[in-house]
Picture (cartoon, rainbow, N blue to C red):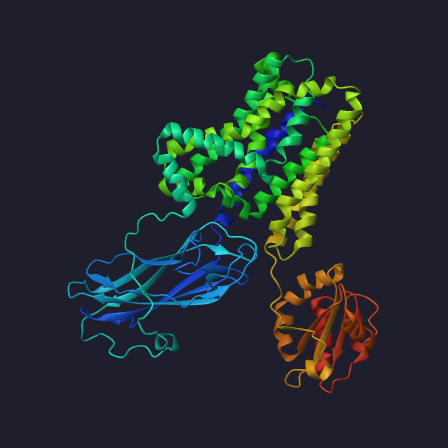
Length: 606
């Protein structure tokens, strides 16, 4: 039972690396698409062309305005790369809106939806004839109602052509977008080579580092110690007691050395991710934007919880101890355990020490940043050094066996809560939350049932069979999670019921389709995933008034409407003709696929 436990830890590290590499495209996920136009597209040397840059922000997201209302917010900045023998005019930014969000007590200045930026480019007489390109970047920080994500840069290119004056287009484009160029009242100077901009938190961190390396080391050690007051370290407490509490027969000096390796493992992860920040120029806290990373972290924590309930023990395998020697088994195991818990803590902690992480990322102070984050990891691990050193004393308490079993199970319950703490915020941003949840359950179930359960008495054949079963479950879970991540709301133009009569619901004399649904209704979810996303259904829905009625927790008004249509199950699908009368023979209770739905709609439209 104990021989293969540490393989779990190695697997966790491998899963972390795989998820980081496999989700690289997700880290680069763009919340804003940027395009540009010029008018005219053909211009003679010495002339001026108008530039329009359009940005489309994803629904349910916003970006900060060019002049944020709060110092800690990162501004949206449009930049053009300099062109030789040409000069850009000032940039006219769109008018921001003030909006309120759950993460801020005050209303903040933001952009939503479609944005239009204006500028001009003057071509000198020395500009060579031929095709040319205007290159630019929109720098922004996307947020939703819950939190903000890592700053991003979206690049764009706008082609144009410089021709002889006889070939130049004399008439400017008459497109509406160019007619809307506003008066030059809110112009912002074009930033050709901007200096590194730091937030207020990053400025504070910079001041600390500038006071000298000794001062910075002390400060970062204290920062690490302070992280123990945050939710990010909750998983470490039960894991430390559970792991070191089971190390019986060791002296205090041996326990101290073993605990030191444990803390060094945590510090190494902090140093490694600090190094990544310096080299990549990005904050590593943005890892938690990636649902695959959250799935891996949540699975790790759930597995730790399972170990607290006795599913398996984390120890060093025989193949490793034979090469390193029995006396070093505990130290190596503690180091690997430290690496594992460091992976859990570090990305979450980055959101709290964002000023420190952001400074390393922006200034690229690789060597110094790596050292300081290693020191921060040591500060974080100090309480666990003490806890691990003296955790062996717990076994000497009266009736320690039953007491420790109960405590381990208590920590197992707490770890499930920590897993939910990491998982639920990401799940809120996934449209198919049910698929996301069951995908995680399948991945964890496959890992636990296929590989982590080391109960005695299993035959060799059964072990092979359960491993195959576990792999199939993990693959199934990955498919569910992937489908949930990429699931989007239906493009149908639904009308939500607001206590109207049938005739009030009707639009332009169209027939009406009513979907009585509930959030707990699995067939309803399946229709949303399949039937209502079918291209043919979306097309024919334009001929209907599509009405959704949420019966999850119906109020008196909805109950009255349900009684009117004698709704007895979910989903109830009702088809009403142009005269406002239900076509009873078309009614359905339960799931119907796209083909059957199209058949019924065609009968309704006859």
